[in-house]
Amino acid sequence: MPEFSKRTCLRLASAMQVALAIPDGDSLVFLIGRGNETDNLAALETWVCETLPQLEDQCGQAILPYLLDRLDQTINQWGQRYD
Image (cartoon, rainbow, N blue to C red; front, side, top):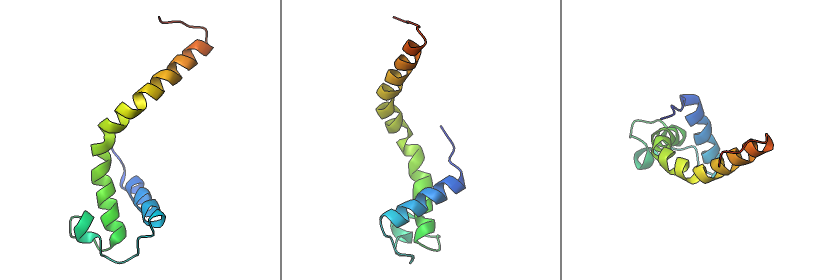
């Protein structure tokens, strides 16, 4: 399972806050955080860090057909066949 750095989670949380126009207050702390965060951004960061690992299997399954197709194209460009 990939490990997501605190910095990555913070950047994703910050982007989500801007994209959804979530205000700076602390209204999300008890809704999506653990309850000890100081503001909405920290609560979003907690939520992102806890949610990303849960999505790994779903993302892997969704992207597998795309990766297989791209691999096949790349191998074919080099004139190799694995049929």
